[in-house]
Length: 389
Image (tube, rainbow, N blue to C red; front, side):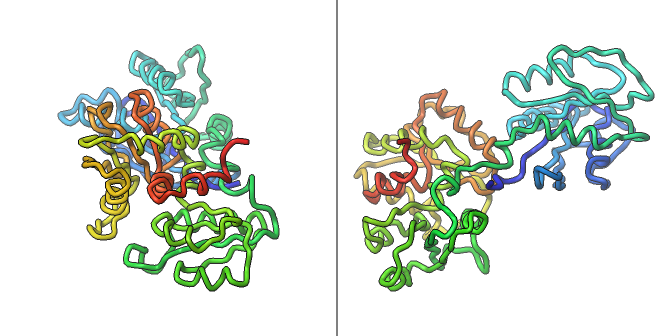
């Protein structure tokens, strides 16, 4: 099993119904500020905890959806935006169940977000509420019954949000030798590996395979005396690595692996071929999923990838970058192609919801690694390993 980032669990409800108290009880810490005054929570507050059987998860404490303060509308907007980033919603109510709570439930249903209700303060304000089509747990800070809520989280949280068998488990076996090509250059983070490299290495160790890490500068020498089952490279050195690795040895990249792990791989395969149909003036959306300092010479999404695309197509293309989980452009349907990074810093759910918007708008989608392989003329080779038989 591969850990696919931390699942995000959002806690939603009206002001002063005990959302923060619930999170504090679950985490066993004073993570969220608690007050009897409505509107205490402003921007969503995040707290990570470990749940046995799942691993680390992120709880998100949100502002009340009926916040009538001066900043209320902005807080409500942030709360509704948080809905698009969660794998599971816990909907909290207390002394009443009203239209706000009903609206939250309908929003979850519309977004296909798993959810359940928590009736907080039920020892103080007991309610005879039958919510059709929903599960409910009773909660009190005096007798929190945390195991019951954790069991409900385990039951409702999609397994695909925290584990998948689609990195290398379906191809690599115990005893296989796999070479990981990791360039150490100006664009490499100081003193560490990037998350896709770390997760791939851990997955190989879990499988029982032998993982060999080399720089691109040492790859040719290593291959003179070894024939690995597979070579996985950083996409940025695809051109050189493909010239060194014999055709008889399968080759792919970390980013392509993550396209399978977190994206819509079949849609990405199809969408990547749209690169050959690009025309002068076409708009390309580059979707990063983290905030980082930009090196104008070596930045893959903002410099290298646009240069590869311009060189391959020979067209005058326009590029727009969306960073982290910022909203897509309002006129996104006018883009011909959207290219998503590996997405190592966001969840699979967050990427898939973004991709669904693009597919609904008719925008072709791709992935950094797939696009780079296509521009370097090795698309079929780099994806052959994972195509459906």
